[in-house]
Amino acid sequence: MSNWHLILSGIALLVLIGGLVFTLGTGRMVSTRSSEFDTPINEKTQKHPYLLNPVFLVWIIAIAAIIFYVIYLGFNYY
Image 1 (cartoon, rainbow, N blue to C red):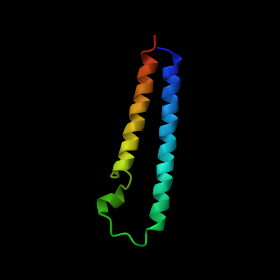
Image 2 (image 1 turned 90 degrees about the vertical axis):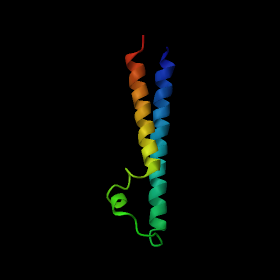
Image 3 (image 1 turned 45 degrees about the horizontal axis):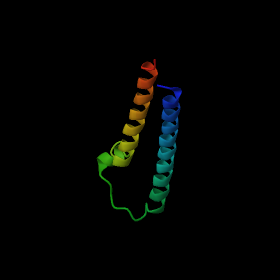
């Protein structure tokens, strides 16, 4: 293995974090525009809006997987 794996893993992590920031910004922009026309939201979803949103769950799982992979490569590098 070479250092390219670590560099590419870091780049992938930066892309994921940038995409997450963009997704959060877009979601915030859309929610402020259409907040007057929304139907009532379930109480459980109102208490945990990010944890019960499948898009955010995918982002959290993907970032955790990339971090785990980078750590794995760091410990198994010859």
